[in-house]
Image 1 (cartoon, rainbow, N blue to C red):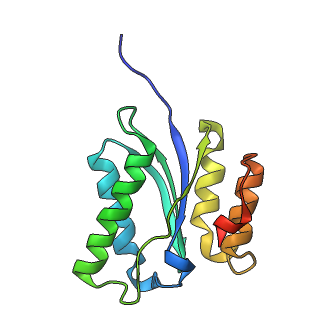
Image 2: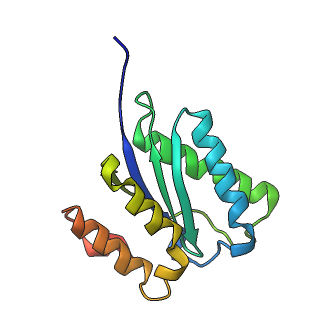
Length: 148
């Protein structure tokens, strides 16, 4: 018997202090790097995007990969890339923690479009409001002091 899984996660994390340091012109480089990292870990990236202060990643995670380890690896590897290539001069690191929401395959297309349209979405909604909405939608209790 083989192993069959469909472990889709919508991962969200922000820059340290939500500083708007992810310059648009260089985000593609960051996204390509994360895509390659996920591919190397046998994960499948459905969509990645973000704005100046945070990222959204929709990915299938290989069953041998622990979610927390994957996100730690992404953040550490991206820190190295950003420092080596100096693509975001004011970048000070990633904020502690993350949001990760398990998704069904039926939600995939809707989420791909949601992530694809982040710039337009954030013309109307702040990251904090978006994040609170996600936490509430997935019925995750949270302490507002940790969202600052």
